[in-house]
Image (cartoon, rainbow, N blue to C red; front, side, top):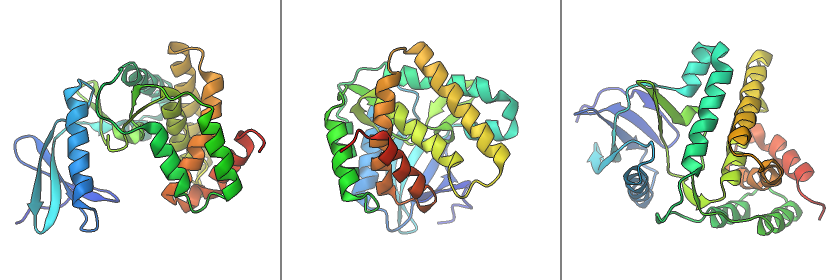
Length: 265
């Protein structure tokens, strides 16, 4: 079946235009069917809860590859806006913080995975995380409150689509039930990881990312005051879990963040 050329490419799947205002997320053949079924089930739960997420269609098999149909969002990502209009850095940072706060305001009875269990699993599978640091990070995690809010788990400007003046958040595969401040820490790790990546060499780009991150945090805690200290306690724990994702260009930065941020062992 001729489905044309991808409109976007990703690590696990390529995206194609589809019929009736939809897109096809066509997964690479190494991506497990049960993981696709999980993504579909989770996407339907999140959309049905009224969160700003695209509707999810059926799983299909195209050219011997499994795919998932999604509602097509006609817009651009917040990352693209920042690249095209860097002077909007403060406006977009506030927009991201407001959106994150709205997601965290939702108490959930959805059947979402436990954020805490996912963090433990990731730390236990982080090959680059030294044993002593892992033990210290697990101890620090045990001393932090769980929470019962919807947490996106991969919330950053590249996963926020702006369409007709409204925001739609995509890629909910890492959504959990947990502590919003851990989710904010995850966003910090993702955004600041870009500025500390060995692949980002232009100083002006690093400068822009750091300004964006600082403005995002400032506005988030202006709207949800009182969590700054706990947020800082979450940073090394979330950084330890991030090491399980095996991203060489931020490995050293993450280990340093874990070492310096955790209480003495």
